[in-house]
Image 1 (cartoon, rainbow, N blue to C red):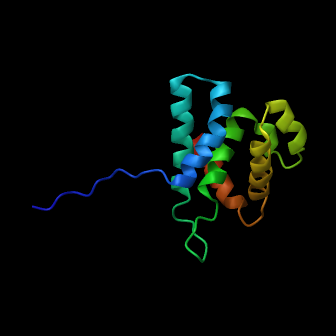
Image 2 (cartoon, rainbow, N blue to C red):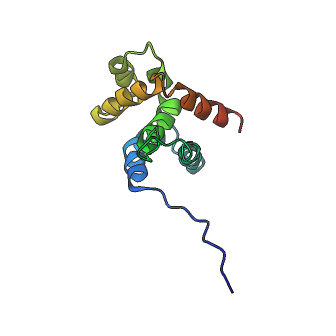
Length: 130
């Protein structure tokens, strides 16, 4: 008799590395298990939304690592995500590490890339409706 496929999907190594980078910021803001679990589920959902948006090489148009950082900044340091934001200043205000600051600059470039704007709009709107 045939068995149903296992529906479990494991997070990628890049996803885990990004979580390790951004987890301290999220945990510092709200260290409850519920808040941490909500954040992880949110960025998993963001990554799922990008499964069908691939470039010509088959890679997601927005990497999981960017989505994980985006989710953390969205919750903990939203001003960094504003187009007019001075990332350096906002990073200091939020207490971002040097690596987080560099990643935040990269995330901001993705968010305001005109070719990707519709995808970030999709991410923002989809989670707001939950």
